[in-house]
Amino acid sequence: MRKLTEFFLRRGKQKPEVENPGNIYIYKSKEQISTIIITTFDVNPDLLEEIIVTTKRRLPRKNDRLVYLTNNSDFTMFRRHGVIFEYLPPLIEQRLHATDMPWQAYLRGRWGLILAKWRPRRVLAYGTTIDTFLEAAPATTVRKAPDTLKS
Image 1 (cartoon, one colour):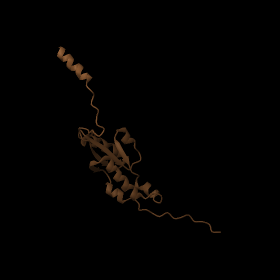
Image 2: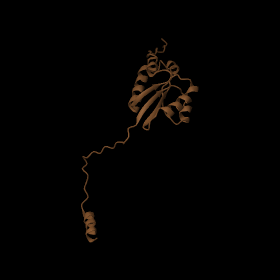
Image 3: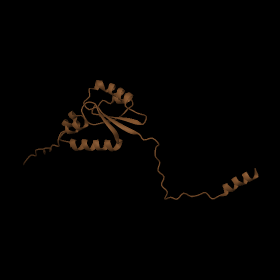
Image 4: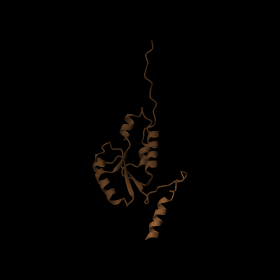
């Protein structure tokens, strides 16, 4: 017992090792999470709940995350089911503000950001596909300068 006690006492007197500040530690989750983006552009709002319930039940594996991409400004159904969603303005709003916004560039950039953010392994489309949605965006229009009074 005495030898065991001396062993622990000597160990306590040892100088603790200082970590080299040049050491880099990489923390990585054990299980990779993959994402499935589900687009619901121009889908009848009455069908949204059925789409959400069906995809939540059938699609995800243990490590899957579902992200819904919609142009429906009523987020009630997404919030009710506690799902992740992203919003892009519908074509009606895009046309309404066509002179104020370069929609094609904005939507393509936003789609690129969504892809970079979520890194989906699959994109599933209900309703209009993302490619058709992006192509339908109004082209940039030049705003006419207001008429000025000449004196």
